[in-house]
Image (cartoon, rainbow, N blue to C red; front, side, top):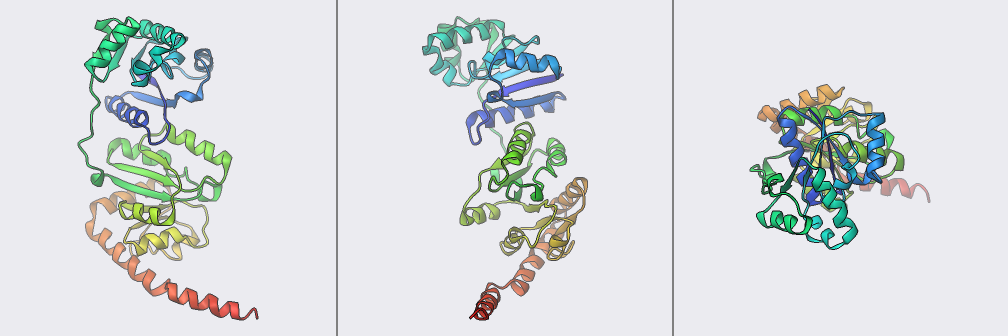
Length: 324
């Protein structure tokens, strides 16, 4: 079954986390679940027209009766609704919104409330059918954050950094091994590419986009990750790779001259030439603890020997003196 899933997907929100978790449940049962930000669509007719022209779904699901549910009113496939919280607690107080939400509940095949109290309030305010509404508390992943394998791609969102190069293959790998996630972090330099990256990430499982951080915050994040990733089309010399080596983080670098000048495969890091090879190298890094320890150790030694801050400082001071 192919499902359309609508939710409010602002980064770092509870709805986003819940939507990703529910999508993983659905896809683990063998279905296809295409997740979209509700704000992509202006109205229910807008969504219905798009679906009639382009995509065929067997069903739909939405989180939040008003923000997302209202968009499903004109589609020609069965749908279910998950109460978001503010819909039952706040939006019911607005008469026009309440009327829309009652219509959504009337047409929905089922509804899900996180608590019995939420179900009772929906029945009271929206005259929903008790038999149609199921109470299902939110599940919490038993996996602790430290057990996640976070692959960190640090790059400004611009073409030369090719931030989407690994996304499809990584997401396929994530579907087989959900503890492996890819986090892309960096400044939004190219507006057009940024929009494209945000759109792809919204509908891609296991891949996340984080806002840029200060250097101290970034270094703190790097220390908690499993590996540092570079997917650039070209590089002069990646400071992020060198910083990762210095911080004791193994590096997976795309096979380009700027990277291979500092990353020697299986010595100071791992090199890949395709998304498929990236997954293979990542799997080796996960399973071969001696390999991981070796590239971490050698990477640190390499940085200390060849990328001394003291030496760099002396060089620039000497060169600047030549300008007198």
